[in-house]
Image 1: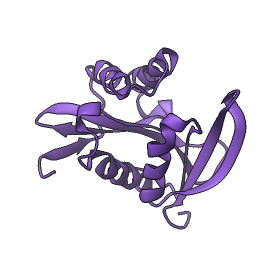
Image 2: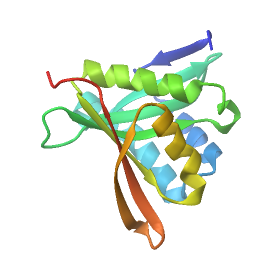
Image 3: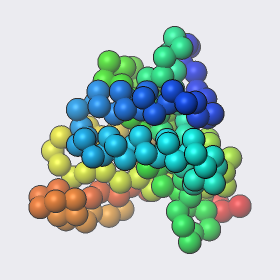
Amino acid sequence: MDDLLFRTAVKPSDPDAVRRIVESTGFFYPYEVDVAVELVDAHLAEGEASGYHFVFAELGGETVGYGCVGPIACTQSSFDFFWIAVHSRCRGRGVGRHLVEACEARMRQLGASRVYVETSGREQYEPTRRFYLACGYQEVAVFPDYYAPGDAKVVYLKVLGPAI
């Protein structure tokens, strides 16, 4: 992974890259893919004021993964980890773990002390839930039938440090 680079600047080509990455996973409904792209578009239109901050992972000049984070309204220093996705052909190579670390570093720069991430409770998301645990997140809540009947929302937390 010596050739894995990260950037936080959002480029006009990123909405297309995010669409390709998220679609490649096979995990998301079309409307969810649209939401992922809308957040990039919001940042392009509004910059940091959008509340969405990005870290992009690049291999050989190609964007192969990304994370989207932002502060949670009405909290002192809690952040949401809105999205993290790695192109399917790059999964299992450590890109995701390095991307999480880069996103956490970015959140620390932005003043985060606590990070929350949510995912689906569907069977398909079991590897995702194991991934968050392996990255040091702890499961803190389960909301049954949240997304749909039989599809719980599972929430994870990682404490990055004291509030500053």
